[in-house]
Amino acid sequence: MALGGFGIGTTEFVAMGLLPAIAGDLGVSEPTAGHVIAAYALGVVVGAPLIATVFSRVPRRTLLIALMVAFTVGNGLSLLAPGYGLLMAARFVAGLPHGAFFGVAALFAAHLAGPGNRGRAVGRVMLGLSVANVIGVPIATWIGNALGWRSAFALVVVIGGATVAALAAWLPHVDIPVTNPVTELGALRNPQVGFALATGVVGFGGMFAVYSYFSTTLTDATGLPSAAVPIALAVYGLGMVAGNTVGGWAADRSVPRSLVAGLALIAAVMLLYTALVQNPVAAFVLAFLVGFTGSALVPALQMRLMDVAGDAQTLAATLNHSALNIANALGALLGGMVIDAGWGYPATGLVGFVLAVAGLGVVAAAFAQARAAARRAAREPADESLTV
Image (cartoon, rainbow, N blue to C red):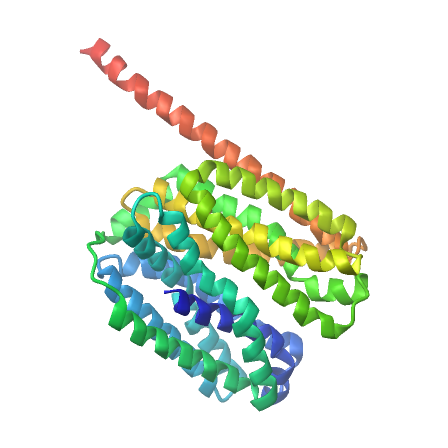
């Protein structure tokens, strides 16, 4: 499952480093070529709830394997796309299984690990996405620039095929209850599910506000040479790996405390980023910390959704990744607005700080609503006995 996450992370981010090559080969401008990134993200946002609902009756092992087959096919279509329009369609198709795969894999891992170890199991699944930023994306980008951008997607197809074979060979048959579309859609009526998703959108939006402009910040604001950017991004990826590990451990001890502590740490790091990123040494330390704090929050968010979703586990778990992709778009938008306003690239950290604090507000509102609902539930039996 982590190998599948490695392939997904590689294909999600490699296009960013290959835009000039894609644009030149297909005869479009680089900003136009950038739409293939948006097409993939749109596929993630649409595919997660759609697949979780429509295929809710499919056994989870079968569904997980089928999702990786679909992912591999989508990347194969990207490899073979003869023109820009078909490449856009192929990237959308490749993005459809993304969120559903991670959601179902998280459920599978949590079920296999059992109580007390769910957070670490979820963190290990997500570890593939983190390792992709350290190893997969740099290697695929190098191959794509050396041998042509299509070769990068060929590498992802190989990873996807290996994942399908590994899942079929080693993924055990476990008794994870299947549901139905009506039950899964019922998660959307649960206010706690809405609060958890909003936490992901708002809390992670700030991290993406920084990450979206991190490369340019390093060269324009920090004054580092462009050759230092891949090293800083690799350090960011190492932070993600560490964050997944620590975040899973923390979530096993307390999901609520992990959420609060995680968002508070993001807020603190974002302030440090704004103040210190123009220092070359501090920039590398901050790259690690931004990756660490963001990834450390993922296992707790995933577990929170599973805890509050009731019978609608699949939809809730997959929607987490739709929320994170919305956060990606929101962070890039708000970060760009701050830069366009003349505040400078380091000010993207202020966006991150404000959004992390807003995320703490969402978490506080969620806990307050849960306590109020518990008090109402405790009063209802007494009220009914008086009526009788």
